[in-house]
Length: 96
Figure (tube, rainbow, N blue to C red):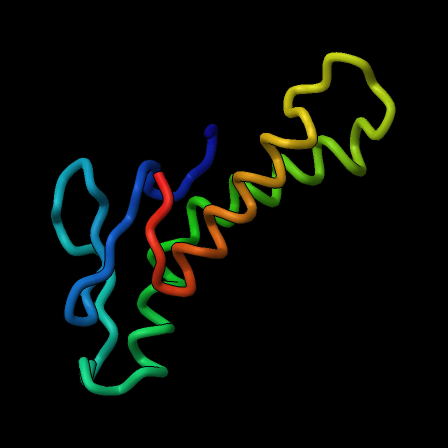
């Protein structure tokens, strides 16, 4: 990706969001309560942001920007898999 956000895989643990590469917290959910399912879901959503971003780019590249271009950057299966993986991670699952 060529973006201004922190690249790579992000993780959420006890209300802290950190990238895999450094392990250094860059976002904190104030007053995080690990028993609160809504706060857990919010943390997972934030941590899944890079994958969701990539999945959206892939789907847009395939279905909108280049709908009929042969040899587009992503094929249908890859773009759909990226979106499924991102959404699964956001919902609490792990797909690598």
